[in-house]
Length: 388
Image 1 (cartoon, rainbow, N blue to C red):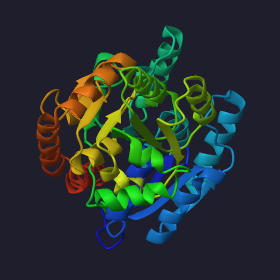
Image 2: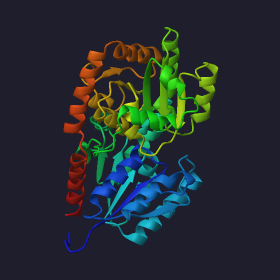
Image 3: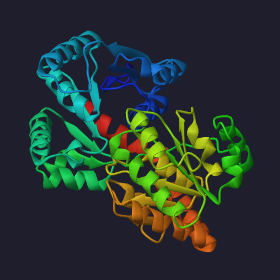
Image 4: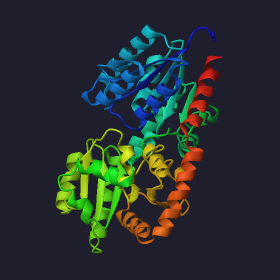
């Protein structure tokens, strides 16, 4: 590699709506922009405003793709592949780094025959989602086929790496596990965080009258399992408790979740706050953090909750058990089980000493094992191995 000239990296992702995968790209851009020339491309969408603003602040050039869609449509996908291919030919990156399941396929096909190295980060394999056997088989075949064109596949959890090996996605030498890592972030004290949240709640007396506050942050997608978390709150109210669940985030399931809250008559116990910028700084407003996902890669918000020293209940999916060891850093339960969520939330509520012990252990693990510099250095090592 010519050390007098920066190598160029193009990050490709399906959507610009700011979630875990976009967080990952933003962190790589932020930490590597002085080492590499970086550009980013994603679907043109009104929901990309936050992501675009962050990239603008870093001085990162980005491209909005007109033809890209999240849904599978062969005719439209062919147009997207052509558009991505033209972009790659135009900007001539040495490395194309794919993110998201859809981009794994269309990005790989767009790059065939071009002189670029191809890296893919699997933020949780789509074939691990709850779908029919036929659908899972389709996803597995698509990943196997496109893996042939990839030089390296990064898995954000060891669970995902083992899944890829079990499903024979590719030679295991192509696979590397690099856990997500987080940087220092602003964390408001409990009173200030509650005051900030009060600006988003119509009736703040809900906060004042609640026995305890459960929090969760994430986009309102089906695989986040928020319906199970809401059901767990219903079970807690049936025990004559008065919990308050605050969910921060927006997404396609919002109307369905609001209707479900109405049906369960939980208006005083569940609040959907919508998207809040830098929501992690509000974590201290919660007494307990709950992750109800039915599918995960490696959750940024879970690492942030660990850093904030919160007692945690989480499901045993994806990389969650790599973050939280059951009865050590928190409580780990089976997914899609409202009763287990309720029982374990109540355990933490009723035993403050145990909750504090878990929270302190989780904090230490987050600081020691999931710092962003580890993620950056391991990713940089992969880039350099491909460039040299």
